[in-house]
Image (cartoon, rainbow, N blue to C red; front, side):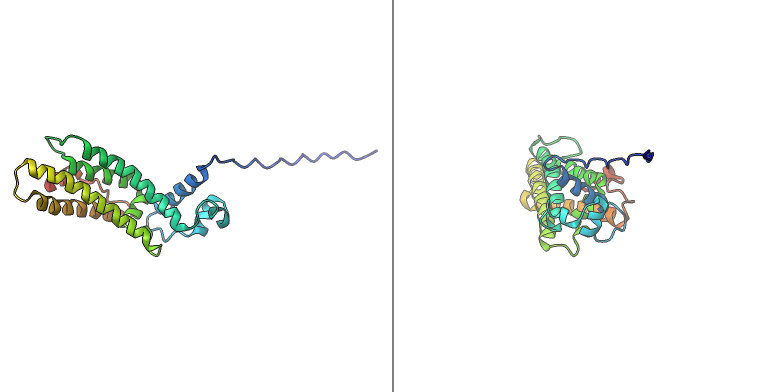
Length: 209
């Protein structure tokens, strides 16, 4: 008589999730952004990112050619999200009462930064230290484009008010607005995301505008 094997049948490991095209790339970018949200976080390495995702570094590089390309994915998201909103504001009729278009542009950028702390670190360059220099160049270009949009709406206001040298006036004010936006984002990042960029925002916007 043969012995009966009473050991339970070992359970098969759960099937690995199959990602649709682009889903794994998005997961990688979301995880990278989440790691950047940790106050005082040091430079994120591909090894740490792969470990968080329970992947090998080789698996990461099947989706992105380099870590710089991962950061470019985050910058693409920042640009697409914010310029969609900024362009809508620029193309809308000038508001008669405050907040004007410049104030609304500042508001949407600061609100975006507050909701996306990891993206804020990319915007102000904290997360780009020791990364490829083209990444910081792209963020510099981003704020140049924001300043250009601000000049456009501020020149329209100056012309409507009949101010002398409206173009020069708009250039000065646009520079002030951009400095305010960057300063608020820097303070948010450097405070470990404690000093919110929208803190007393209405009062601040009225002072500038």
